[in-house]
Image (cartoon, rainbow, N blue to C red):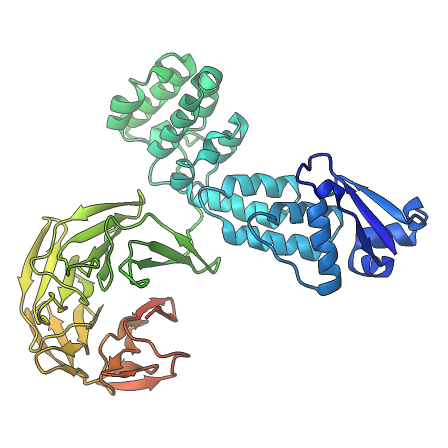
Amino acid sequence: MASLKPEDGAESDGSRDVKIVAHRAVLAAACPYFSAMFSGAMKESKQENIFLKGIDGTSLLALTDYMYSGRLTINEQNVQSLLTTGSLLQMACVRDACSRFLLEQLDPSNCLGIANFAVAHGCTQLAHAATTFVQQHFNHVVKCDEFLALSKHQVIEIISSDHLTTTGEDKVYEAVVRWVTHDILNRRDAFPDLMAHVRLPLLPRDYLTDKVDPDILVRQSSECKDYLLEAYRYHLKDERGEENERNRPRQPIPLSKLIMLIGGQAPKAIANVDVFDLDALRWMPLNALPQRRCRCGVGELKDFVYAVGGFNGSLRVKSVDAYDVHTDRWFTAPPMDARRSTLGVAVIDQLLIAVGGFDGSTGLSSAEAFDPRNGQWMPLPSMTVRRSSVGVTALNGMVYAVGGYDGNTRNCLDTVEIYEPRVNRWRPGPTLISKRSGAGVTVVGDRLVAVGGHDGPVVRETAEVLDGDSWTLLPEMNVCRRNASAVALDSNLFAIGG
């Protein structure tokens, strides 16, 4: 037996008094550090009491328990300490598990700290992933407190990268100004060094004139005035001339493909917005909706995501919120003409189409289209039946309204209607195999898919695909779902919630 006594002078929570009694054979078998200690000529191989300097007692206790049980709890409070202690004890499995946990926690508010921590502890893969995350989410990262705490050299390392993902070089310039003005007395002298890595020639001329030129920090620096003059000359040239580090366009690392989940019921209407990163296999929060919404329709059009209608917990609404993917902000878009909950939304010909739904008293057969170019909704022809809880998507330039519930006859529907914009009318489509109200409907490849839904009390786990002029059954889902969202990414089909 050996008595382990950690000695970490930084501890003030009582863990300095930890004394751990363990079998030498267990310690040596599970930990390379102890294996080397007990099998060699080190004095600790004969000692009963072993003093371990620089080791956190709480983490050592957790890792000793892990050596016996094979179970280790990792959370936000202990992960860094466990990784540090695991590294000192040469426990690669612990180090890797902690690295994976930190990787899953990456977000704009903590990625800089995780990157620095990973570099300090030699976690190469985690450091690379965190650095890539910083580059890909630069616009959001620079708004967080961690960015303001960076050193000048750390800021330069970020903004000098060719792989920075940003909506424009103005975001880089504004980030530099924000960092400097956060501590103007101590950082003013760093401004010219930082501006050397802002690619001013890539900024629009009017931005240079209106924003950069009048900036007092620029005017007080001869180097910055030279950079500004260089940018003006760049804009005056008919030919761009030789490329250099200040006029070379950045080449961002492609962002991961994301699934966006908007609002919902939990159990009441909520304003939460989350995205699923298909590469990292994790959910991350985004800015919440301005108001709570469930049973809304969602459509993406020209870098904006629209949350259309729905139920706010009290009323069915006609309001619309739009999300700007570049600024990570929601704003209010023009409202629909009708209140619509459980509606369907599709996008065709640069128009946002809202179909069917429930207005609080009756199901709707009407449809309307939003043109973002003039900011107006316009009526479309009505369907032949009322359809609330209808599944809607676009395929080959046409809008498909699949299933739903007809409040007039009080029946769930197996019928399909297709809107043809060329002739501005609805026509019947192939009938579903099963009646489906609240089905998830999307397009995978070039085929229309309907999943789940219900027929009265019967909630379905089945799915079917439109193959030509008829529907064919697909493999069943693992659980029954109604009012689930169906999303396709590449050749994968996701059924979410319900």
